[in-house]
Length: 289
Image (cartoon, rainbow, N blue to C red; front, side, top):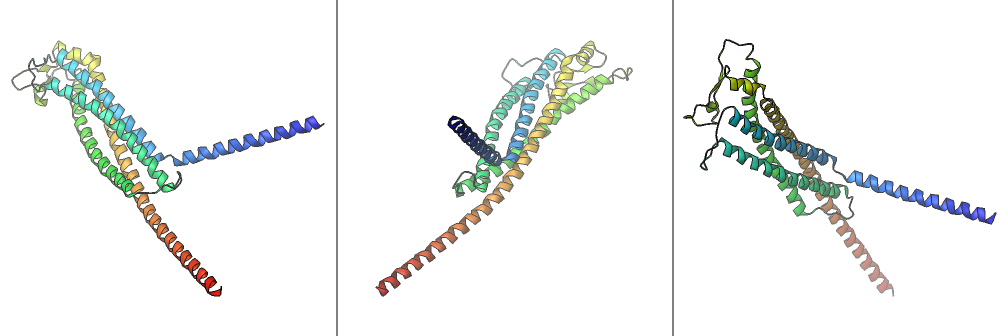
């Protein structure tokens, strides 16, 4: 009987101990989940998705453009180091590499800033004080994000140009069977792709035109440029989302800073009153003695 009683007591103690551990783990998880800046997280995911879509699809679309120019328009790379269309495409590819790496780091920085700002506002990490440096960092991120938003607007406008060009080519390819009597030609000189002196015109009646329309490169490159345009638009929306989040955090930090100053002044006044009261009590005690 004593053995059974001891076993029951031990089991109750173990169950209580596990219940307390689970409760503490649950409280810790709730606290961690409460400290996650969800608006910044959503904006970061949108930014990464947009940048990945723009960089990946843009890079492959430029590679497809090089193939189309070389195979169907018979544009050759300049032997000297001049600024021709192929050199421009190579430069844009390197810019894409830089954009991908830069915004990967920038998304991490904005996410970290969101964590620290949320922690400072909600006081989740103990005695977390808002410093002047922290407010300067928040203001700097707002200015930088606004500049990047304008830059992404320019990138979106620039990406719409090849989408428009490829839409015209794709539209002519779709309507060649309808307009059999019409002779439509594509001249890359009007887009500044080749110099004016070089004639690389391709008309609808030629065999190269039909091969280009039936090829997979044209259709794939056109849709890749559309996806790149969608990615640039998503990056613009992410920048606008970040601006709203950073502006709201700035306002919260400003209010929290004022409240922090008020609490400091109040605690100092209470300490002074306490010191005065203690001094008078000591003086009365001395006088009585």
